[in-house]
Structures are given as C-alpha cells and as structure tokens.
Length: 370
Image (cartoon, rainbow, N blue to C red; front, side):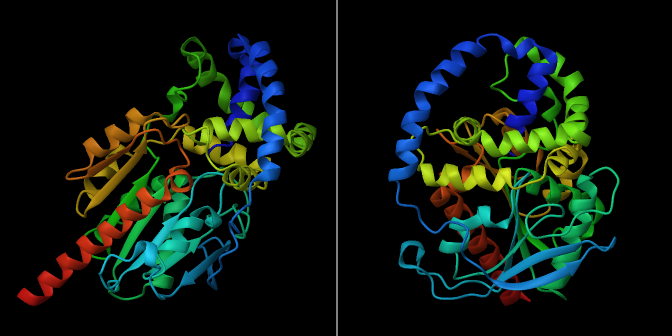
C-alpha cells in the first residue's frame, strides 16, 4: 500500500537515481508543511476507524490468530437506500498492504443493510504475527479460505472485495481453490490491484531510475528490517510526521484537496505496521505473478476498479487485469488515487451494492426456474 513511499525512498538513497530534483522537492515540502499543520488542526474529523462488529478469532493452519469482525444486517442508511432488500449474501472485505480492516470505514458505515465481514490479514492490525519465514501471498489465500469457512459455512454464498494486496489474496484463493468460484464465491470486486507487474515500479518514479530500483529494492527492503537499521527506521517513521503526511497524500490520493483527516487516518494506519512486516510483504508483492488465476475469477461476475491517478500501482495494470478476466467490468475512476476506498467511497459502495443486486437477482432467477 502507500507505505512503499518509505521503501522507495530508501531505495532511492541506495540507487542514487532518484536524487535528481530532491532539493527542490524538500524546499516545496517545507513551505507546504505550515499549510498542512493548519489544515490538520482545523478539520473536524469523523470518528474514522471506530466502528466495530462482533469479534471472532480464526486460527490459521500454522496457528496464527486472525482477527475477524462480523456486522450483521441492520437498517439501511437513507443515503444508500435504493429500494432493494439486502440479499442473503456475506460480503468479505480483504484490506491492503500495511493497512488493517479499519480502512473499510466508509463501506462499513454505508453498507449496513448487508452482512459484512472484515478481517485483519496476518501480521497486520489485530491479527497475530507469523511464526517465521518469508511472507507469502499464497499464505494469505489459505487464510481467506479459512475465514470463508468460519463466517459462511455450508452453501451460504459470499462476495469477496479486495483492495490492493487484498485483491491479490483473492487471486491466491482462486489459484488454490478454483472450485469455490461459481459455487461458494458468487462475485468479486477488485480495487486498486494487479495480478503482476509491480516489479516495473510505480508510475511516479523517474523512468531512468526504474531499472536500478528493480535490482536494489528487494535488498533495501531486507536491510531496512534488520537489527539496528530497523530501529532507526522505526524512529524516523515516528518523528517524520508532516513529511509522511505529505507523502501519503501524494502517493495514496489523486485529489490534493482530500479531507486531511482521511490522510491522517491512512498515514497513522500505515505507520502502525512494523517495518519487518513492511519489508517482508513488500518483497512478496514485488515478485507476485497471479495471471494464471484470472480465468478462474471469470467464472463469476467481477468488477475491477482503478483510479486513473494511482501513483502506486500503475492504472494500466488495472486495465490489463480487467481485460484478462473473462467478462469483467472495469470501473475507471477519474482523478482518484490508490486509496480509492477512502477517497471516493460512494463510487466503491455503488459498485458493491450493484454487484450484490446482480448476484441476488441471478440466484433468485435460478431458484424460480428450478
């Protein structure tokens, strides 16, 4: 997720290629910091991340406790009422890299007419830490399989929604359990994600620097998370609040006028993720290639959502993802960045409720004809 800004910053020091123009950027940031502090202090924040559901702990097959929360259907807020009754579906939300389930605040707030399940991926949020070894997207897919079994047993259908790394978690599940798609899994929403290509670099990186960064980034990631360096990096993350805020706004959002409280919310969530986790999963995502799973996803209705100002995952990768999933619908969000679920929640929520309605109508038609 957006915390790759820290990693790529370190890689830039190692590579030297990103240094061009750095002095001008720093000067501009110093001028902007005064305005940032004024904005942050004057914005009345919504109680972001304070919504809670019924807690459940699911043990992964290696013993890691996964923190899950279930929101049972309640009254549909007026702002999202569409004249439809919620279908008998469970919607499971998979968050992105360096985040936790709280990032789905606006979906949790506005989709209460449906049964919603949120979980913290291993090593993130309130879930436990892995016992050791390299991080693996495949492991996240196996965890999701157990979550589905725990929250929607038997033949209860589910819709899966994934943001960034969460989308890759869904693709990993499709690789491991293709039989679930079209039977148990009735629909998928993939937001700001890709099946491969992250090793080509983010679109905001200077083009000449990308080949160097491709070679150095895995080494920098590992080095930043070990011993004394890890301690220094963590200390720097705590004291560099204003610059981190500016970086998060630039890389996470397309609209520079996004509510400062929302930027604060995202930046604090990222900063709470230990540097070892940032490094381990960053390396895993960097090498990820899940293109072989895409025909499996095409067994069910799929919506792919991409902001055209995503500065972390190139928007072209989102377009490629939609093209490679049979029958997928692409929702191209003008002016939006990587944190689409926070920046344009109404667009995201409309896509999710539309898919719920589509899946519910299809199931009803099948039952009537049976």
